[in-house]
Length: 274
Image 1 (tube, helix red, strand yellow):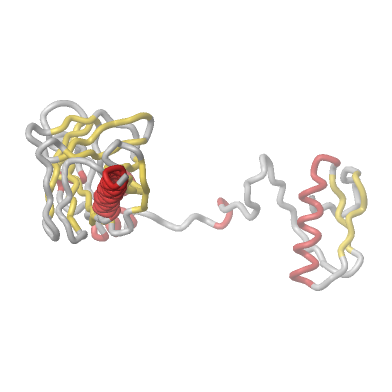
Image 2 (cartoon, helix red, strand yellow):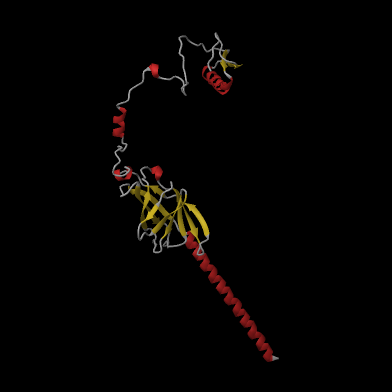
């Protein structure tokens, strides 16, 4: 019986060791997953974009660049994140040995993903040059609404967040504004805008239209209209909205009581404003 009792004690100790070991494995595994999740969640970047030149060889193409700066406290690796943005559709050509790859997904949707050797330490930055079809000459052509998506080790999305620290660099140099080497259109400046305006002149009074939008035909006659209480506005049936509008405006600015006299056309001897 004493021997059986020893066996029971040994079995209990064995079971206890299994439970403790299993608990440690679960705890370590949980900590590892949490640490991995925290690393993914800490990915935080500053992003800027600028046009380098529109003077590439070939028809209608340009070179641009994204600069990615690591704002987090850990090194950003080659997985666990991607940056998405919107831009008018373009064909993309990435540079050899680029640290990140720009891809056109569909329509105006693009993404930036890390290359195999991507590694960015805290506070460091990397610039990624790439070529696009068609010229880019204005800030409205730039990528818009960038956001970062974070993934776990299995490629499942864990979070997404707008990149609020995003800058579009100014278009200042001729190669950034001109559409290739054959573009002869002057770059707009205050000086040449002033020179262009020097050729303008005021129109004569008899050429100006007093009604906007301009009617098909206007017949101007001599005389004055006395706007007083009880003024009637006559109008054709298809101009009821305009008649109501002019009545409300006249009452607002003159303080007089104005009437719409029903849907009938102008007859000789009656005043019709609409």
